[in-house]
Length: 177
Image 1 (cartoon, rainbow, N blue to C red):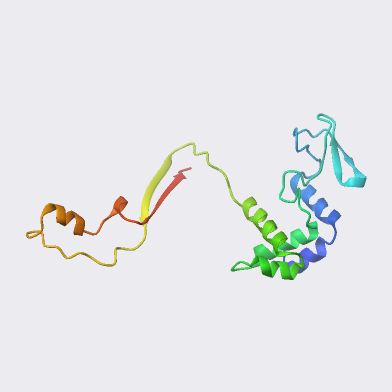
Image 2 (tube, rainbow, N blue to C red):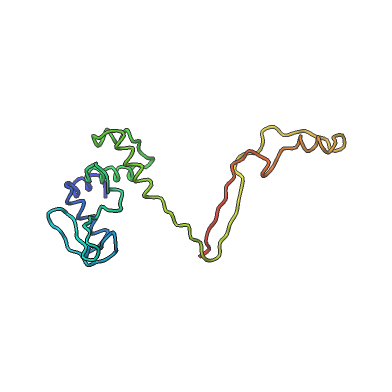
């Protein structure tokens, strides 16, 4: 969806909430606290009541929109503009385009970025691991003559490799299946 379509489709808070409910639950709301589908809708507040645990909840509980004071249509536009900018977009540009403060924009963009991080860390079957040192070769190579230098001087004059360098250490793991 482009920015124009988002601005037309999500003009009010109710439009945004209806879309999020359809996306998150489908047809029947599920309690965000106990996971029960024994719920009833409270029409006036866009909330739902769970008969098992007795709490009321909305679709915003447990999402990046939960405690935000930013209106949902503006939040949806912010996400759309962040994702559609090919080389990224600055928080100050978003603040100017949406008419909100820089602090609010920065906070909301960080919420979106943190929500996009995958935290899957369980590796079960065959795991492959490797490490490497990133960085270029040392700029100045030592000129040393094996016949004339002693063993101690030869060690200090040689360009260091591996763990003896100031290169960045990188380790990677991947599950085969």
